[in-house]
Amino acid sequence: MTAPDADVLERFFARVAAEVAAGSAQRLVLARYEGEEPGLERLMGRPVVLRGQPHWSFVWRYRTRDITRNLPAAEVAAALRGWLAQGFRNAHLFTSTQEVQLAYSRKGRASLRTGRLQGAVAEAPPPAGHNREKHRWVDPQADFLVALGVMDGQHRLVPSMARKWKQINKFVEIFSHAFTDSPLATRPADEPVRVLDFGAGKGYLTFAVHDHLQQHLQRRADVVGVELRGDLVALCNGIVGRLGLDGLRFDEGDIARRAPQPIDVMIALHACDTATDLAIYQGVRGGASIILCSPCCHKQIRPQLLSPHPLRPILQHGVHLGQEAEMLTDGLRALLLEASGYDTQVFEFISLEHTNKNKMILAVKRASPKPADEVLEQIREIKRFYGIREQALETLLAADGAIPAAR
Image 1 (spheres, rainbow, N blue to C red):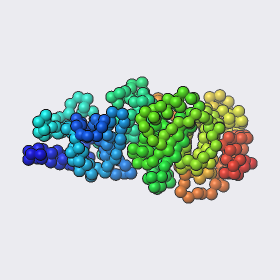
Image 2 (image 1 turned 90 degrees about the vertical axis):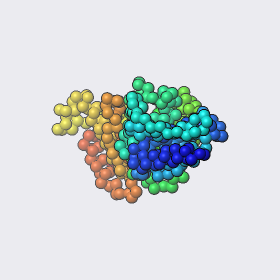
Image 3 (image 1 turned 135 degrees about the vertical axis):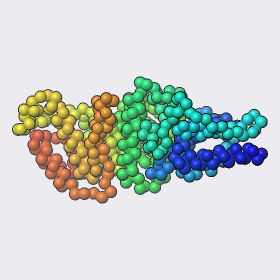
Image 4 (image 1 turned 30 degrees about the horizontal axis):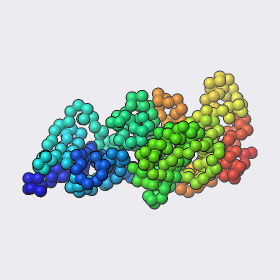
């Protein structure tokens, strides 16, 4: 390497180190690979925040697979020096306003160019200091998004999938915060996180949780999606095979036929009526640290409801009776989870403009159990007031001795 080339390289490495340290670097791309690694095409990096600390996530893009590795931000410049020496002939640093390009000519001479970004390139995602709200939770470059039709071949959002993309990101955000608050956050990183997703459908959220565990939380994943429709199971397992995703599979079956097993995270979105109760029961009996449900249909309790005075004039309207049944069903589920050792929230999962099935029940296992007597008495009072004789989750938990039998 000539002295001018060495000077160019050092100026590029110094610029990268300064921009990364300042939090203004947004992307790094290494291209024109001429090294000895078979099938390697390019290397791409972006800033992320892992466990509250600035990191960079790098993806080695091969013709048939991707490999991801995360580094602390302080180590990026030194690592870049080694990667360039392995055979990349172009390197691009993107900030919010500029592109800094290191390039080698055909004669092997290095040059450095800086240009102001214009047009579409200037719309690159904001740096980590802005929390990357639209890009942080799910990486748009993830290949499973292309395989599922959320992104096109250039990793641009398919317009008709905008609502699904928003739902996926919001769900992963909720899951990530719940993970941090749960006992799972203190477990050894090499211990697998066992996830069971009931009613996985086409697997949008199943793939996303698997990706978030491995790529962002740096945990070993053991994720199983359970789905009744065999064609969707085959589709999802085909994608798993093509992308070479370890720790992810899809099984054909339903909630009722699956015996409780040890799990860490239970997910059930839009399980109809008492299928949600079965899913929650599976999570409680399996010792799940996190339970995430988005209930669908509320048929069991509505026929049992009395219209006690002074609510009778209000509940004479069918729409109000239906809303009351939904509120009571999910409220009782939340209380039963509280009695089973969880801190529970019921909230709007995503705006009604995106889906009308927007309620989420989130339960995170307490580190230390609390007496359940007060909560159980609240459940009994609610049942007496409304004349509720049976609730599916209570029946299941009582049969196993997890809570006292209903009185």
